[in-house]
Image (cartoon, rainbow, N blue to C red):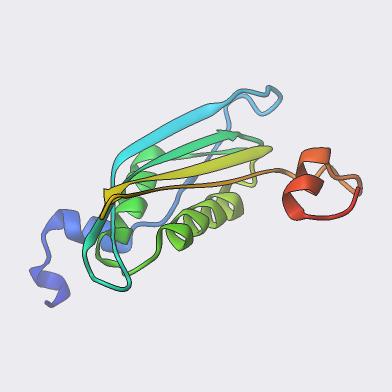
Length: 144
């Protein structure tokens, strides 16, 4: 299918990039929780669709994510063959890179298929200078 044959929504998804916005309260710790209940991707083995609820929780630093850009960007996964684990980690990595938050948690809650329910959680606080938090050390597997 050529680019000019795409519907406007398909073009928007294809061109989507995560867009950081300035945090209106950078001096305050507050949590943002975003739920995306209609996430879809394709099983890399069977090609069957996988459905999930993606939950994003974060404490912003300098940036917050613009919600329309996030919605469109998450829809890029619809036609991708990707595992539950890879999808959740890719979402986490992209948000971490763009937002550089104080704390970020991404949960991929994949609906049962074949009597199997998958819940993938990726979480980490921002490094605290040369001394990293106890939680970061536990998460990264580094000795305390």
